[in-house]
Length: 113
Image 1: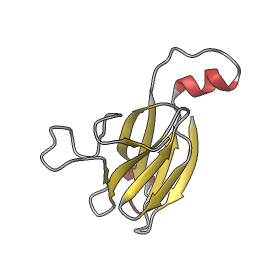
Image 2 (image 1 turned 180 degrees about the horizontal axis):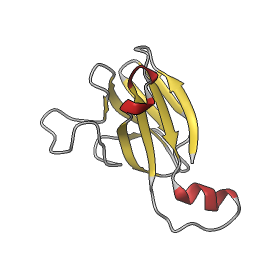
Image 3 (image 1 turned 90 degrees about the vertical axis):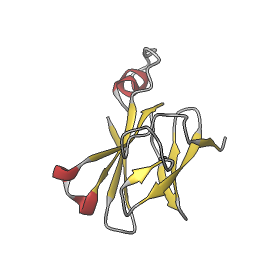
Image 4 (image 1 turned 60 degrees about the vertical axis):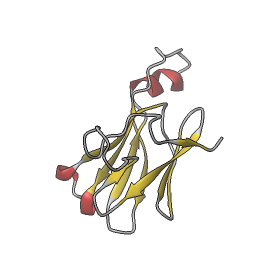
């Protein structure tokens, strides 16, 4: 379930998608506990070039960019991820074994709350 759009400084659009559990929670059902939320980026707003930035999130909603970080508000926390708009990546450490642009939930995230 798409929840929030944010335009970055380089013309990119970021979208938080709360996943299937968000719909169940919205109508009062207890979800399966899956963390299937995702944040996508669309370079220059082009939907045909959608790229996955972050996965495994707990119903992400709010997004914010500040300095070199992407802040993601989830149902149970706010986390920040290093964000590189030039390469459209978030949370990737140099030399990481993860696929470019895809970040599993807690690897680089810093919980703020």
